[in-house]
Image (tube, rainbow, N blue to C red; front, side, top):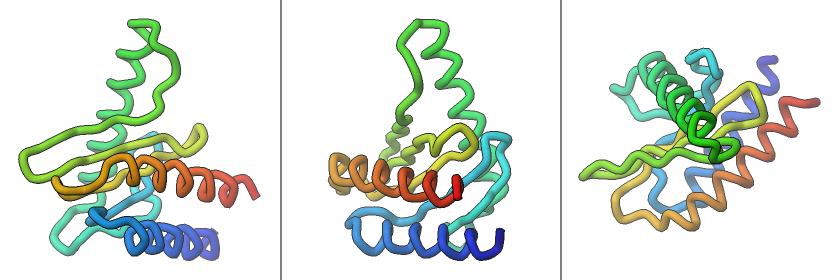
Length: 124
């Protein structure tokens, strides 16, 4: 698994390098545990993972209750930027921190491509 972890870390680094506006990213389990993180110093990976899983769970329950289909992504907008979450298959979540000035369309596209790459890698 450590080989896959290194590959996932490289995929996250490429996401951040190739997508202006992304400040950090992480892959977390649906149970709220960090799998791979590229968060800045001073950010607690465990807290980010737990919050990500909690927000995703509430979003999924809301969509289910309101009959709006399967969750695609969650966007949380703050005064100084965004937290964007999307599922990776049935077992993981990709979380990205982005600047307020970021091009959200580009980030959504790159997150979708990244999630697919990681899903394929985890399926091997």
